[in-house]
Image 1 (spheres, rainbow, N blue to C red):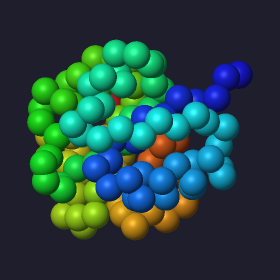
Image 2: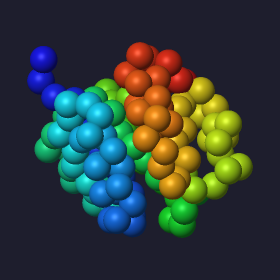
Image 3: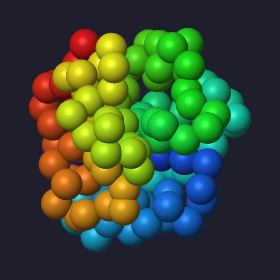
Image 4: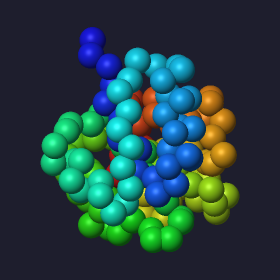
Length: 121
């Protein structure tokens, strides 16, 4: 089975690298890091199984950004530093959320929930 293809959309590169390190240490995956500004270019070039999308920091992803990710067939996981979104992002309450700073088990659980098809609106 080929490694999972994971896209991390995060404007803070060190935070993205932290997630990448956790993921590489736990599952067979290839990780690509992009920002909210340039992820569109990456989505047209590669196919991803899971997309981790930072939510709550400014600028926030738009509904169009989220729709573009969903349209590409990837499973979505929101990441956030805001406890207010721990139970879900408004309008996407069933989409898994991983809170920053990342706890290894929590991040992997969110990815596994997304891969299981749970949490899809």
